[in-house]
Image 1 (cartoon, one colour):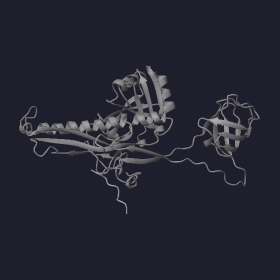
Image 2 (spheres, helix red, strand yellow):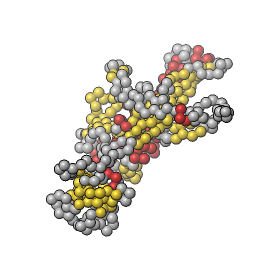
Image 3 (tube, helix red, strand yellow):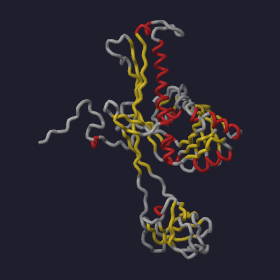
Image 4 (cartoon, rainbow, N blue to C red):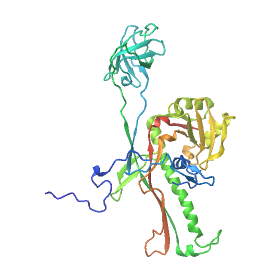
Length: 407
């Protein structure tokens, strides 16, 4: 019997047999200073019930415990119904084989009725060649006569039309997409010497007060570190300098840019017409009719200049400790949150989020904890640290949008 493979040193999640890592699919932190890390505050508190005293009980709907540092979700979406003609010369009124793109032939099924929205002509699909993105149609299937078709004409799928007594049609379904992200380990270390801890210091004058202050302050710092990763992080797993796994969790901006749902103002001012276009074409194109809009002072200034009468405080003024203003538009409602991290190079950026697309995912048993007395045994000091291993679940990011470049 051959000698088994040996793992020299500490076992880790990359050196063990990879099939041992059970893929986590779904399962159902802290509320320190929510104004400093509003996204994390929302994700960890939505679904809980307040007691009126600043505390909340119940289960957070946007929090999910995971059991693998690479955690998984599966996303799906409804099939598209719009496509365009892809033929520079167009087609005459008798052509029956039409090449399409944007997105292509995959959205069509035999017996679909499709409408050329420019000419009004309705056609009935009789065959689809999915490899060449060519649909074969019966022209003038409706009351409107067949007409010449131009390149880039828009086609709308109305729905199928079957003959009486006909058999069932062809199946055309969408495949689930696997979406993964990593948990990232966050640590914030702090401490005092035993001499300092025993001393009376201003302003409290009580021994040990400085360590208590540091615990409160660095708890907030830990939350802010996680918040920044949730916005600006990029997903990656590598072997670190010590030969052990180093993982980075991917953030909101990476996922929105990948989805292509971005309006770039190209270092210009923001007009009401441009903002309305952003809401119509990006922010509310998919998903809920009520979303959150995180932005900095630059965009807030423009909103206040042209949104008089449309901005209002929510009745409670704050949601989970975060001040929220509502913006009512014809396309949907924005809950506007000023984000302190949208500053400097990110001052001209605003992000619309459907919070159902995000979850705060601590690794099992690795949510935020305060570890005390982690100093060396012979050290005349007390060292503490906050430790969290957590990642951001990101699915269906077509529901979210980014506006950038506002100057």
